[in-house]
Amino acid sequence: MRSNVQTASNAIVINRTLRNTYQLLSATLFFSGVMAYVAMATNFPHLGLMTLVGYFGLLFLVTKLRNSAY
Image 1 (cartoon, rainbow, N blue to C red):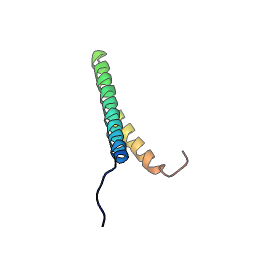
Image 2: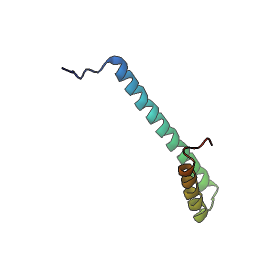
Image 3: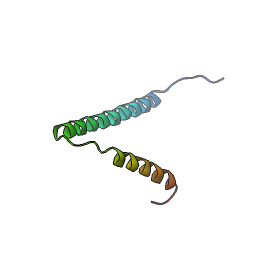
Image 4: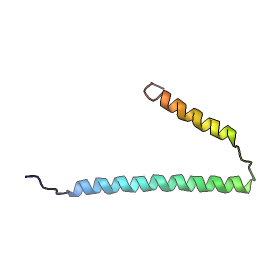
């Protein structure tokens, strides 16, 4: 019969993973906030179509080259 007992080391690994995930999320949100402030402070124009084309181009390239050495 199996019992669902969670060991202390397993709980530590799960806590470390959650902590690292939230740290990465907070770093991403902080960077986005700083860049939004800089864009507003410098009155940077909206890039529109150029940004959209770049986004889809990178999305296509990552998908196309995901199994290559590059």
